[in-house]
Structure formats: structure tokens, C-alpha cells
Length: 214
Length: 202
Image (cartoon, rainbow over all chains, first blue to last red; front, side, top):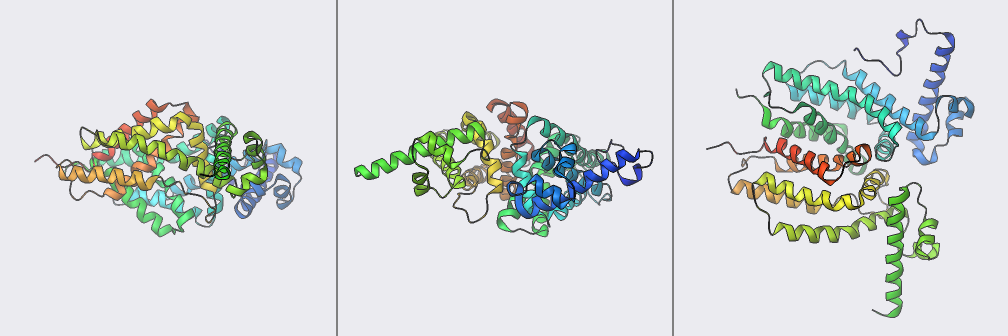
């Protein structure tokens, strides 16, 4: 991985001042508490006071790291997106582009299956968050999109897919389908396996026009 | 309709118009029933006579818009010409053209629809049923005309178009995209998908 991580991993902590480390740990505690409360109570019902209490910190500590509840929620979403990206880096190349794409995005479904209320709130929030929060989120989401692009590009280079493939457009549409499928999980109770099966079909139709001639 | 019925209907219209305007102006979270009642110049109680809450209000606002949208679509469907891909594009273009007249409202609706609890008296974001059928019909006609492969996975094709259709609306708040911009993206997306179902030349 060669991206500037927004949340430094523990092994990068060496070399940081004690104060920076302490701030980082406070932030992690708050994000963890926020995630738990946003998941169990939903966005509206979870208050800064309750989140601070859950983290065993003062509300002052919350406002030292986050400007308001929306900011905190956005950072929880971003932390999740980063976790997904990090988990994706452990996924080995599959036998085909389709298989690799399914493995990567399917990971998202697995990671979110136990926190569906949070995902639900996050998806709703993604449509109304302000420009600043949106820009911050897009920077991290780009990491995931780039990972997908790498897989597609490698497929083209290998000759598995035609060079006519519009890689950026395909990546966006993959993500659109991946995200849209959550509606099925939220409202129709689809489990991870069912979501993956649907995504597999969607990957199929997206790549169908670009399989290189045998 | 008796005077009482007419008055009740008029109140309902005013409440829905007020709700629509407030949702568009300040979003779903910030809008309260009290604000809607005030804007519509009715009591909070009379809002609750017809609507169980905010969710049902927004849902009904959007449902009422569908009649106008589908009137336009039915008009257009009679005159659909061109390749299968272009017919798909035309149907989606009408949707964008319609919804972008109140794009903020539609974006608010998409966002709110994710957080509605199942069981609330809401009509789910499933205008998809009619739109889905329309797109599937165009594809099936395409098979008959020999433009589309007979083994095309129509359901998944439609799913993927609809996911892209919905997610393109994020371009409005993010980039200030208008109907033309969103239609341009959708055109390319339909082209990409259509490459996968186009019949091989004989």
C-alpha cells in the first residue's frame, strides 16, 4: 500500500509524540463509541453526550477532535471505508477479473453484515452531507475505486478483457450496484450470500461486452 | 364531492405542497410536522388526520409526482424510435428531465428512503416496478428485432441500469450537474451495458 493513511496504523506510531499518540487513541475510542451508538440507536437518537459517556470521555474531548455529530458520523463512515480498503489488500488475485471483483466487494458485504443499521444510516447520510464532508469521503472512497480499477486494468493487460473497456466508468457502475444492493439487505433481509450472488450477476453484465475474443 | 370532502381534499393538497417545498428547501431531517402545518396554514392535528408522519408525507409527495411523470412517459412511449439502446436512453432521459425540475427534492427523497423503517406507511422507492417493466419490454422487443441476444440477462441488465440511474443523482449536489450532464453519463452507461447484450452480427 502506498497511500497516505488518514488513520495511521499502530506500527506507524513509532516516531509520533506522546501527545499525538494520546490524541489518536482518544479519537479511536470516540470513533468506536460512536460506531456502537450509531449502530444501536441510529443517527438521530445517538447524542454527543451519550457517545462521550460511552467512550468514558468528556463532551469537550469529542469537540476537540470533531466539529459536530455529522462530522463524527462522517469519520465513522470513512474509518469503515478505510478498513474495507485495508481488508481488500489481503485479497489474492482470483482466477478471473470477475472472481477478484466479487471477492473484493463481497468483503464489504461481510464486513457490514453485523452493522446494517449503521450502513443504512450511512447510506442515507451520504445523500445529504455537506461539500466538505463529501470531499473528505470521496478521497477515501477513491482508494477502493482505484483498487477495482487495478483489477480491471490488469485484466486488460492480461488479454482477458478488451482494451475498449472504459475502466473508470465500469468502476463507478460496480460501486453503484454494490451500494444499491444494500437496499435489499435493509428492506428485504437479504444475507451476505444472496447479496454476493446478485453482485456476481451484475459484474457479469458489466463485463459481458468486453471479454476479449478467445 | 360534498363540501366537507372538498375541503378535506384541499387541506390535503396544501399540506402536501407545503411538505414538498419544505423538504426541498431544508431537507428531510430539518423539516418538522409543525413547520408543515404552519406553512400550509392548518393545525398539526389536521396534518396527522391524513398522514401518520414525515415519512408518509414525503412518500406521498413523490407518489403524486409519478402521475405526471408517467403521463409524459406514456406520451413518449408511443413515439419511441431508433435502436434498442436509444429507446432505453430516451426513457431514462425523460426521467432525468422530469426529476431535475426538483432535483433537490429527489436527492432528499433518495437519502430519506434509506432510513425509513420497514412497516412505516411509506411507498418504497420502487417506482422501479413500472420503470423496470418498461425497460424490460424494450429489451424483449429488441430480442424480437434481432438487436439483442436471446440469452440476455434482462433482469440483471435492468437492475444495473437502475442502480446507475439512481446513483447519477449524486452528481447534482456534488457537481451541480443538470439534466443534460446526467443524461450524458447515463447514455454512456447504457452503451457500456448494451455492449454485453448486443446480438452478434449475422
